[in-house]
Image 1 (cartoon, rainbow, N blue to C red):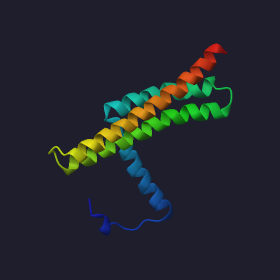
Image 2 (spheres, one colour):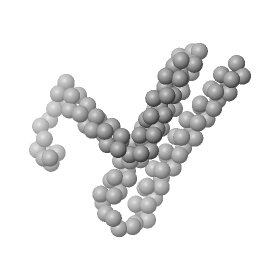
Image 3 (cartoon, helix red, strand yellow):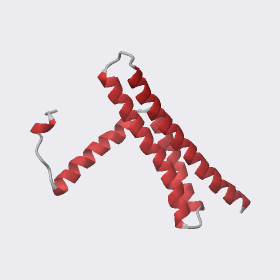
Image 4 (cartoon, helix red, strand yellow):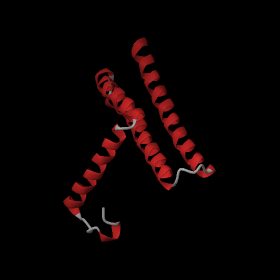
Length: 127
């Protein structure tokens, strides 16, 4: 791949088309990560469930948003891990902190998602 300074400056639909290609490659890369794949497969169940069981659109949006947040944070975690790994295989405290912080972000997004879904489940079951 050419260095960025030699790439043509894209505008309009061309820029959008090429950016979509980068995003698609990112999703394919994410699919190769077991954690992202598991979360994506779970979202394939949770998103239709949210839409089907929610009585108001805002509830569905919050439930789906909580699931999407987990996916987004997992992709960012993977990006940070890959970047740190590219820098070098030698252990460094800052590299470890970066990976730990990214992992903590995933944990917090999962806790948030679980809380949102538990709250909705409680309401659905207590009807």
